[in-house]
Length: 265
Picture 1 (cartoon, rainbow, N blue to C red):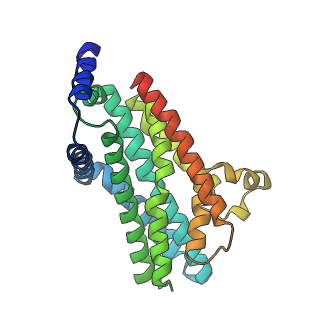
Picture 2 (picture 1 turned 90 degrees about the vertical axis):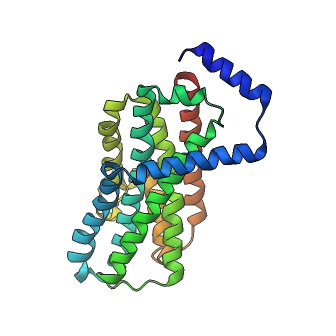
């Protein structure tokens, strides 16, 4: 499909217009199809669900039973953040890079649908996957780790994970606009794994060298971890700052990615 046909399709769409109900229907249909497509892809969903749960089972429950209640809640939050990052980074980044290479985005630009529907569908898919990860970890923590968490704490942690995936969606989206499809998984792992370690998700931040402790706030995962710790009662005060910083990360990554998509997408 050439640029002339794309421009013609956009002109037709703009001249005819779409009613509010058709616009909403387009968003709903795209979001539904995107979620179903990834939920039915075991090669995508299984690593996202099993990777953090296996780590939490081994290090948070089996090896963490003797560390006390606070340590158990700390590990639950840390591996929860670790698990939440994955659907945002890989669900957006890898799929976007592959679909750019395959010409799917060019095709979608020619369709009579709102351009934001494609991104909204991926965002809802990532939020749903993040919520499932948190629910699995909470279930393991309550059933196997015998954690003492109130309903409010569990609800706050679920909300933190579901919304906390959004900055990583924006980061994955940006990486997906910069890297070719075959190179996206490797590049995202170079972002995902070091960021997790440097944010104190694998070992407490106080055990890292002093210089790494001072650099921890430059990572969005650090701020999401602090919000998660507050949700389970391990941190008090100052959470508004972390929320604002995460919103800033999301806005910067998203704006940069949208500009790239408009120019090269």
